[in-house]
Image 1: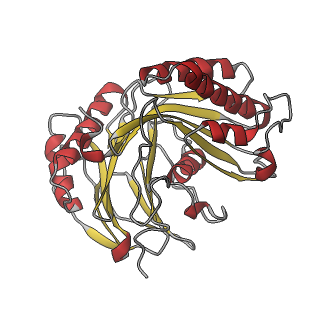
Image 2: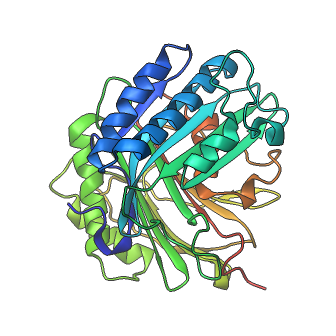
Length: 361
């Protein structure tokens, strides 16, 4: 399957995403080795490969020195017709007390390399960080392959270099190499069309069902109503073990989200003051999906739409994290994954932001 079909933002393929726990200094060597292998797949070499290695090693060393329950997700990301290399860092406390100082070159405590977050940001083609004292920090850095232009999807009315309004993360259950969850999303005519599938069970058979859902979405006429897409996905999963699926059309200009879901994929509209759940009906896509209902929900200005599998609990809140709703979709997805991804299961989250583009007046 071509994950770049039609400019979709899609989950990493098997073998293109790795999770590394970073809780002691020796983990930095493993991070360097693994990100080197991914970088070489994309043609990184020479000085640029050295910069990727340096940035990833410093990030891992910082996690080991300062963080609690630190981990890094190393992955090849594919969105909008291109591929790039990315690492995402997550930790629980103590947070960064002074983010501007931490970006200063040479700033170091506890014996890190002393590059400072600012140096990592300059080495990367795109980066972001969000930190709260006593809560923790999420950050990312993205590197374009040699000879490629910046990839990604820019929302209408934003700069070409602005972070895309779509970002997702997937993590397989411990002991499995393949994640049984998958997502895909696309920006079309000022609206984001998004799907997340949680294949039943874990491992390769669950992954096969989830990727059959991705393929069915890519083959659907675009744009299509969420209910019609879900019916197509249902047919596409009939030869698999099936799964839970949520499909959303996020329309900021209309102040509306249209949604259809079957099973226990959670779907939320998160505004400045509260979050509101969108309703899925019971069933298994590919097996028992007799009732497919599409409903419309109000989309407040600047709200974020979040879809996630039941590998994440519902006990997360973005309220109390000032400014996060206006930040990169990837920082929001990473925060939700860190705060809610506690279950022993495949985990996935997809975030769609609306701040700064297409919002109703």
